[in-house]
Image (cartoon, rainbow, N blue to C red; front, top):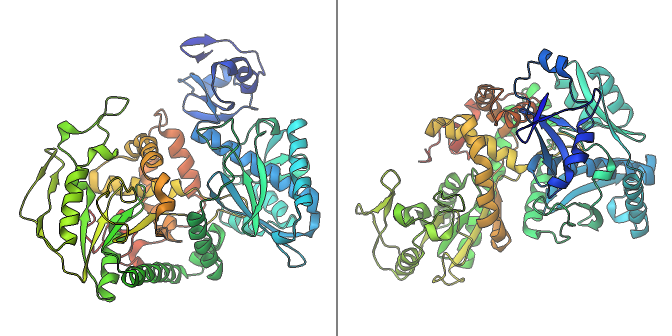
Length: 563
């Protein structure tokens, strides 16, 4: 007997979660796409276990809930379904003329694909008419409600399928897979492997569009907060350019996928990858420092989401600024928090430390404008235990050849620095934009990278468990979407803090933390997902990671005062 919304739910033998979901769909404000029994996420096509099976599985928690396309896991499932439909449609329209079709990354509400044909041409050779044929094929899959069918097969057999279909990245990836069986999906006559759950059928993926853009194809899907509306066609150009540059660099050094990274580690080239990655980042930071010098900016405003490496970046930038003749003075916005009793509260009655009103904006502007004039200012230090700003004699004044490096969540918001001239400000957006893909059709979400970073750092510096980090993560993400992401395109430059090798290093720190999460806790499904994700990587020792690396901010051993 299952429990649904605190009531017993009777089901027939052989009944699927899909059948139940159709009955309760009117209770939800977005399409149901997955089910959850206890703490286990299941696809809707799966049969509900009977009483005997529940006992055999030891399912004490029999609460049934549903996941919609508004939820994170539901939106990712929609994305995978749309991806498979697109890949099948491309194979249908262009057939064996395609040499390689790759999902590069997500940008805005779009998934960006590149294609190379056997004659050497690329997406520029695709006409609007041909793209219309691809879209029409996808529409037919929706109208026919074609099923996504999952089959478990021996891993060796899966590898042979990938080899036969020219999916070389998958073939190499599964060389390192330890499990004897693999789940593959079939949609019509198209077969592929996907990391994560799938919708029950194409009818669940009915909102999409295609657009030729940036020498590739954009598959536009709904934004997860508006799951019943088409996504925006506009592309955040600066973010796209940052991702493109990093992706091209990954290709240049021969490590565009996890399989390629594993090959390098297995062949003893891990140190080479570390050094190449660190050199690339140092080159980029040096370019930013020279640009600041050339443009004569006096105050550098750095912002980025949680675990993007803002603090380490600000220190490395300060060193590079010194190399071009500018003395840098770091200032943390966190020291301008208002007294705890004056901090606004959110809709749940909790302190909202991420809203702009949690900072003393007027005092910050008074101090920064005074410093730019050459005046002497005493900078506060916020005592987080007492919840009050303190003045401990931290006085500062700057000369004409010196600059301020300000780091904080609202750095790109002009309301935070309203009194400072735009001609003096240089805005930098920093984030861990993951360019490495699992394989040609499975991308690594940037948020996964940052979540694992934060998990490792929280445990090391604050004693938080992985369970604590996962429980807080969605709240953190909500604040980012509200206070950071809307301003990212206003930055003068973007810096990608993701290192191509870092997940192989973080794996050795994160796995024990994730394994410690109890199976019956609400955070277990996310822990299980991340553990499966980390299985794709060979581990890499941290001993060769330089002490000034941004990754040291999370694993420890940094030369900078980053905790």
